[in-house]
Image 1 (cartoon, rainbow over the protein chains, first blue to last red):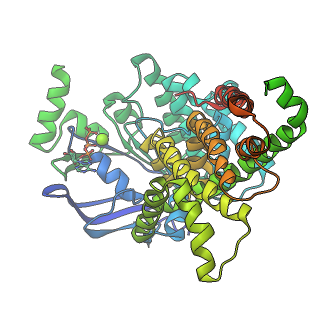
Image 2 (image 1 turned 135 degrees about the vertical axis):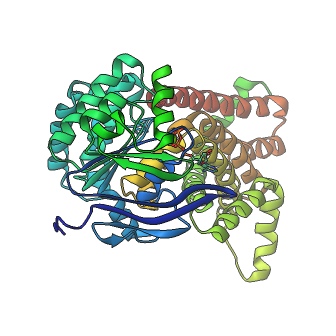
Length: 249
Length: 219
Ligand SMILES: Nc1ncnc2c1ncn2[C@@H]1O[C@H](COP(=O)(O)OP(=O)(O)OP(=O)(O)O)[C@@H](O)[C@H]1O
Ligand SMILES: [Mg+2]
């Protein structure tokens, strides 16, 4: 299980269509233990779809996806068990609206992992402390700012003690002044050695935190590179165009 | 007879009738909620034929008149060698029909849940039933308090079907015909029952409003 040579996430030749639209084209991507991989690309290039296939919120047409060397099981209890060990953080937070922040973090460890109530609660409080929203624990999500909700959502994912975390544009729905607080939490996670796959448009953050940048366009991986090289002298023409289009804004 | 004369003579019978109506209402609504919940879970489960079966159940019982159903239960079931007591026949009708409406209210309550929450639950490893129990049902119920309160009142009124069979003790509607066959109660006899229905309905409405304010989900 803890074989460090086996990638935590291993996507091999994944293809996917939405009807006629070819959203993923022969995608191969692996993320090793402790690695932080950032996916960048224009809107509609299939970044979210790729992220979602990794815990089978979307299925692929062909190819395979392995988690720690094990193919993702089809629907059922085994799939649920596998998903429970991959944290996912969404653009729109998706906290459970009827629960307090603390209940949000405790819910899955209790229901899914059947953890002891007291322990689950203590761990939840520690995590809320770590992401800086412990003082909000008894409020419901709608009473929190976007940045606080997203940090709580990260704590909720961490409570499952995930082997890897997927982030799909975690700061895109946030007001500018709240982006920093979420990125800080993510930077700390990365520094603690969490295996992370991050879709983001925050280029400075990507450059600082990523071990590897993956550039996608039209459903394909166009370039995989170190952050330094990617941002300073990207190999592909499309990445160059994409980066200069960002600078022009 | 005047209302006060009626109350003097039949007050305790009215009281008994009101308690009977309340009892039938509580049993009917509890049954309707239970079956409504089960049918709703079936209607959203991953197995398609089951989902259709759930929809079919709702279509049937949402569209059948209570009186017609009661007649079927009382007169047709004995041919199938099923002899239920009158009260059971009444309760079957007053459970099944509201259960279909209950399911409809829960379905629209579910529509208030953002799809993202369902995805988050799946991503956290919730199984279908865990998700239904912890995320979906609680939110559906809490969003449906007001329509379910209306359903509770409607269920109470539906229990007046009991007056169509020889049920003892009589319910609030049955008591009126009883009095009017023995005395000239006239409209006044109706008015007393109507007032008691109204009083109960208003009280339930208040209660529902209060519960709704307590459990409403901030979004
Ligand atoms: N459920 C779906 N059904 C049909 N088409 C879809 C579905 N989800 C996404 N698509 C389409 O697939 C393509 C890739 O979508 P995806 O969300 O993966 O892009 P993205 O790279 O995440 O874009 P963005 O930066 O805007 O989030 C888009 O053209 C999108 O319209
Ligand atoms: Mg996206």
